[in-house]
Image (cartoon, rainbow, N blue to C red; front, top):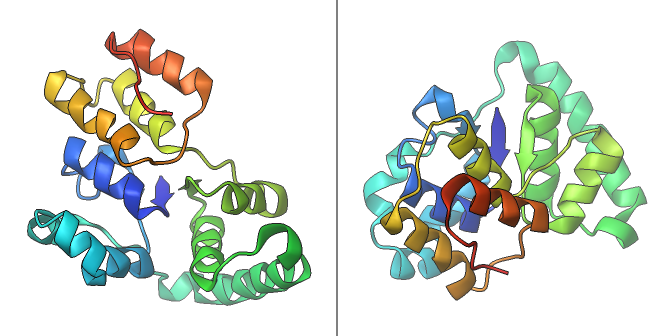
Amino acid sequence: MYIISDTSSIIMLIRIVPGMFTDSKFACETIREVKNELTATQKFRGKYPWLRKIVDKIFVTEIDTLEQADFITAKKAVDVTRKMKEDIYNLSETDATLVTYAHVKRRRLLTEDRKLSEFAKNEFDNKPLQTLELLNNWIEKNLITIDDDKNEIVKDWRINNEPAQPEKEKKRYKRLTGYEYEGI
């Protein structure tokens, strides 16, 4: 399973796969803080009015009673490490919560934030992935196919000046879909 940390990743992927949070084969979830940012921020409400119609399809993971003690312990460890290495990572409270959820729930973190990715990888042995890698995984597993309409959504990644994707994933996208990845 994946915990998606970036609003921009959710916006791109949910347009391609509206059921990415509700259909277990896509294995996606996020945390309440990220969902709240999508629904409460004027920038998103104005730019993506369609988001209001599907907000109830964004699954928010919760810590259950059995995980509570692990979560508290892990959150303390994340906070201590975050404070000790603040000059390297400079993570927000939401970033710390994301890493904690990923660690306790044993989920892979999806993030476009390089510092958050390095923190999760170096300090908590999580191997984060980026948006295009997840999309390619779905294509490779035959969960989705990319047609002209879906490729136009992928092109929006460049138009909206979103973070660069790994070169190997760009080549993989071309091999899997026949479309050139046009983002950075």
